[in-house]
Figure 1 (cartoon, rainbow, N blue to C red):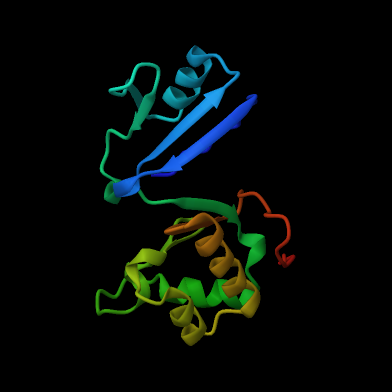
Figure 2: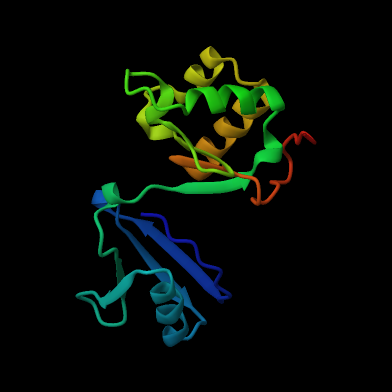
Length: 163
């Protein structure tokens, strides 16, 4: 589970526990504001054994969630577009159509459907700039799905191609 919050507080203390749990002690914020922000993210809070301490609970198991990022097709070259278009053709013969999907305005890449997706993209002949984008999104944001969309946002710091 990943939970991002922007909190203005006097002090923040974080202690790592077993089983991926953490204890967070925050001084100088309103408890109601914290509960509202966490609830807006789709999580629930409960009071722990010690009064005043809260535990964030995710109602879904972590394996049911997949991190995804949407970005512009401007990040792929025309050659990349041709390769992804061919890869997305439905053959049902063990080819790439199970993890590269055409959406009508771009592509969905299910990176978790391959053991080494970046090596597979290299084998397919996709550009180094696109592979660099995929590696960065996988490492920095733990992206399991990348949605390349014609109406998507251009991500800063990555190469773009005006085709």
